[in-house]
Length: 164
Image (cartoon, rainbow, N blue to C red):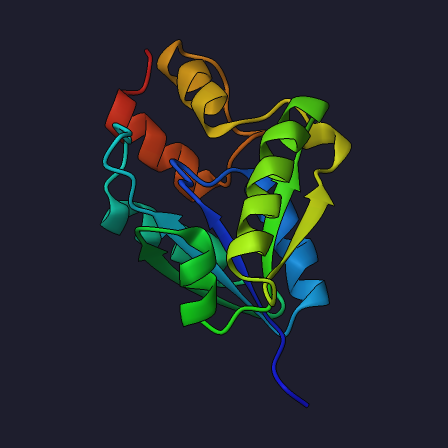
């Protein structure tokens, strides 16, 4: 039987427990999940590509299922093809996410009909969470321990300065 590979793309700046929730469920569905960080020159990320890759590897090594981590630029659907993915995994938090994701899924399907988009709803505790919101809470001195793994919290505190 052919290996079922999924691509889980994103900026992951940084990866949150919401991302990990989606990833854990994707590993239950697919034989292998490739977590891939988008190199987007239009964005000003807090962490470099290499730092994000290292952080993702650190917090996903204990997951059941096969997870590989890499980065890409260009079209997501083209990268999916390159890694042999049959699906692109996307997490949904709210209706507003769906509108944007739906448009991207339709375009990706048009560009590559053999790559499907799989939407996974986030768990209730993660519905409001985003990397940007976690960074802002950290920046303002709030407790982020409920939102990110300890290694990510440590990295955020080092980068943003732990409020004192």
